[in-house]
Image (cartoon, rainbow, N blue to C red):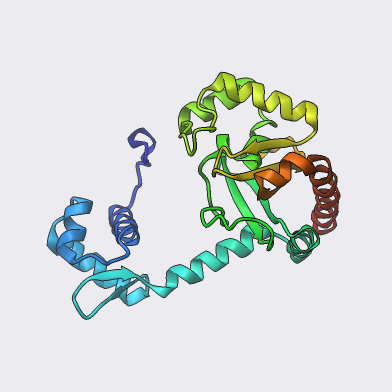
Length: 260
């Protein structure tokens, strides 16, 4: 959601409109006609036609034989670049893959990106349920994931309250925490435990644990490590999970420091 009060005085309208067109096409996997795009973006058909032609020329949308448009392969190229930039040094990615291979659990790195909790790297493990949402760039559900809790735990209580108020507390499952008071109590318990946890709060039957990797005064430099596993395994293996997470976190912190 764009804040109209934050609109820059030198906003280039054509660029803004092109991005709105791209977003609309991206939300419609079956494709959209120019008229449908124009209606969704509240633009004239003539303006939309010129924008779509430009995006097609640059490879960001593709025109199909039936006249509809879908996203183009250039989007995939930009996504790969995003994943590479988010992951950081190659040694960090290697540590993440080693942790996933050692435990069989999917592992995730998270950071604040533009002030928002986001997953920045993923290494999938064969023993973890596949979570299709949890990919680099995922920036929702901070209140429902251990990764999000671990990052928000580095903020002050007032900062956490503002974050939750701005981004909301969507109930992903019946177990999702949906009030700031419940969230504060949960984060405090995680601090005492030395590991943030969630059991079925993001996806039923799945658990997640997370620890801090890199503390820093600059919130954008803070990093956390998380892993997901069946909730039943977390109930019996929490101490082992914590020990392995801390070991992997130290290795990742060393890799980050070596590149600094």
